[in-house]
Length: 223
Image 1 (tube, one colour):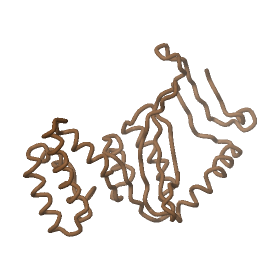
Image 2 (cartoon, one colour):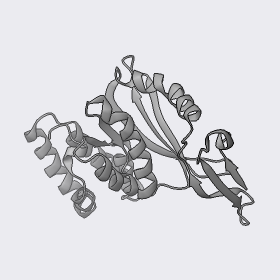
Image 3 (cartoon, one colour):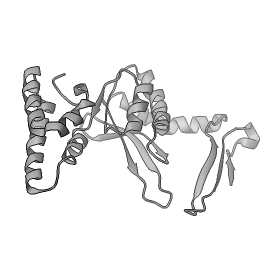
Image 4 (tube, one colour):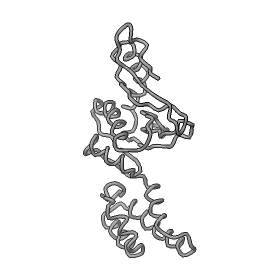
C-alpha cells in the first residue's frame, strides 16, 4: 500500500509512505517513508497545531522528563515522550513519537526533532530519564554537555534486583537502599563520602559493580 500527500497533484509534494502486511502479525508495517512535506499547506497546518505547546514551554520549569512505554494495541511498538512541569507542578506534554523499539537510532531521531524546538529557545534544559542504553548514547550525540539526571526510582529498583528475595535478602535490600538514598540526597561532600563508604562495605561487590559505571553527577546532590 502506498500513501501520498493530498497536495501531491496540486503542489507536487514529495511526502510518501509505503507499507505492506507482515505475515507474522497480520499488521501493516512501514517499509519506506519520506516524511518531508514540501507543500505550503501542510507545513502551515503542522506549525499552527504545535505552536501553543512549544511557546508555552518557554515559561515552564527548564526540566524535561524523557521516557518510553510499550504500546499494547495490535500494532505494538513503543511511545517515546518528553514532558516537563509547569509552574503549578503539573505535567506539561511537549513531544511524542511512535517507534518500533528503544534503539540509539530511534532515540536520536526523536531527540533531533526535540532539539529543533529547544535550541532556538536559548536556554539549557535538564533531562531526567532512566538509563536505557539507546537513550544514553543518543543523548550524548544530540545534547552534549546538557545536564542529565537519572531517575532515582529506576536506580533503586536496579539495586534491589541484585539481592535475593529471602528474609535476609530483604533486610539487606532495605539497608542498602537506605544508604544509597543518603548518598543521593547528601547535601555536602563529606556527607556523601561517609554514606558511600558505608554503602560499599554493606553492599560489598554487588554495590561496587553497580556504582562502577554510575557517575555521581547524574544522581547525587553533592556534586
